[in-house]
Image 1 (spheres, rainbow, N blue to C red):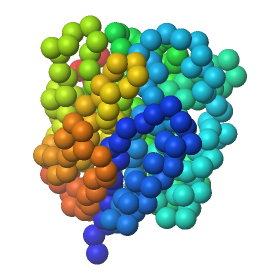
Image 2 (spheres, helix red, strand yellow; image 1 turned 180 degrees about the horizontal axis):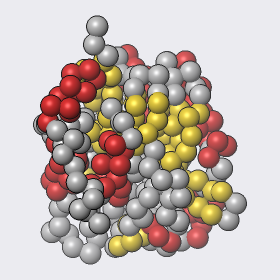
Image 3 (tube, one colour; image 1 turned 180 degrees about the vertical axis):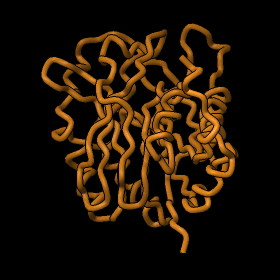
Length: 278
């Protein structure tokens, strides 16, 4: 029998109440698990509103040590109960350092480790360099119970080097928790389609499925998030996709043995010339 991997993305809005956000995420994880999902991705910084629209020191109080974070403390047991893997995006504090991080929880509730966002944006509405140091973990591919999962965080998703690195590390699927929407300096700028195309390109160039989970809604900061979460196959085709305001879960299963053969047949990894790329 072929090895199958079923992935899901969650699309929803988040407010100021962390407990309510965690409870909403739990409900949607349960929905995805009922549909057969094995690895379930919620959007970036699900603990609250996307606070990086401005520079305000009060938000630092919402950072926790990775394994002590309420998101991890409350959702890791759910991974065990439902037998699913959960990549959980958090605001992490490590001593005096702060990171935009992800804790990978395997089925059974085991913590596989922490990834810290490598690429930190800094622009109108996305002033993350004020809050986060650049990640120091390197890229990560997690050996979950169901397959090898590579996870980047939001701005990471625009960089082909990150996707290639995770593919070279043996990822079966790439997943990206996201918080992206309006551009406050230019109301005519809509990045939704290029945002999708960048990741669809990663799928094609690495012959690998890609899934992205974005939030929705107009938040108090004035930032409006455009959702449009999706799952793309190894061709970059959207096999499941939400619109800008849909709420719920998307689920799709992939045949990993087929993908292994197809990836070898394309020859992208055989024909690479890293000796020329320097």
